[in-house]
Length: 465
Ligand SMILES: Cc1cc2nc3c(=O)[nH]c(=O)nc-3n(C[C@H](O)[C@H](O)[C@H](O)COP(=O)(O)OP(=O)(O)OC[C@H]3O[C@@H](n4cnc5c(N)ncnc54)[C@H](O)[C@@H]3O)c2cc1C
Image (tube, rainbow, N blue to C red; front, side, top):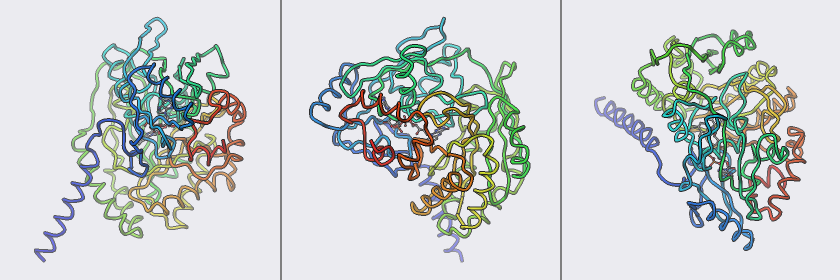
């Protein structure tokens, strides 16, 4: 008996140690993506430190008929940043180029991370208008996939771009700015790295503000029944839904006139809680039939989604404040009004097919825009993010694909997959239906990159370029 307990304790400690090791921060250009499922070959890695170097690398690649892909922080689950020849990292090309306080715009070198930018702005009493769940991404990487935060009145991060510059596949520097060269600008705001290497990005910023965030706990029925009212109930509202326990946490953040941060939860305790939860998730992932019971056990007690009311800076509130268990994600942008039906359908799929969905579903509204390849093009969207911890790749694929198929065919919602997440087998035909401006994008893309040097296998499969 004693030795069994010892064995359990030892294996428990190993799990916690493994979880801790996954959090060791990375230095230098990434070798893998976030969940280590995608590998970036460094055999032909280039890390230029000037614009002239970037131009030279692209020109030489074009002359030799080599492919080039830029990797940012490698935080995409999809293979969009994988290169078949030259892997370009802007790790050495970071920093702020200029701040224009009259126009409230900041221009950064494209390899700058959102974390670096947030710190720079905060030191000067400024802030981003919106942010996603993390800020490890590079500015260019984030805008290139349409990375978003949440809020009915807030577009994705690419909508904050007012100008950018890139090196085309012909090795030429091209600039595009809001209001001039409109077609080029609309193509370049979200381009999944297909127009060229972005060198500089100008973003609109604002005076620093504080957000008051209130977390409330509901049943799934309450959240779906009052979906519209809840989502319109604040500047930045998101839901986390757990399907087996049918519980729902609503995080609503509003700009406040309060002047100091207050009442932040104890993040050390939260991080320990997450580590313990990760250990439980890992063990339950080895026995998939146990997942529904484990999830009910974790999410039904009132302590999970336990209400809080706090005030803090935008990064502190808008980003997930504690480390997340490393996991897999797929995400679809749906028309806002179709979301409750999609979540009900998702629950049916999970129960009927016994899918071990071992993490909450995240639901976030994002304002519509006019950016050609933006998942939010032309419609107010509701982004549904499916997360899985330690899944078998096949099980994850089946789960994500089933939801994609259901929203596309059964519910007819024209789902648009997030470019940086697990991309389902959407074809060129599907993408043409989802993105009415795809042909216009292709016209500009083929002018900018006539030799297709920026197209890799994953993009060829999806776009057919
Ligand atoms: C834990 C986690 C949380 C996340 N949270 C959110 C979220 O809240 N909201 C959301 O929408 N997404 C989220 N994402 C997805 C993430 O924001 C995107 O995948 C983003 O593109 C990653 O940025 P990156 O710098 O790592 O770029 P990479 O993943 O390295 O590259 C993404 C794309 O950008 C291109 N690219 C990068 N730099 C350049 C450049 N200089 N010029 C041209 N093309 C370039 C790459 O070629 C590739 O096509 C999350 C991802 C993780 C791992």
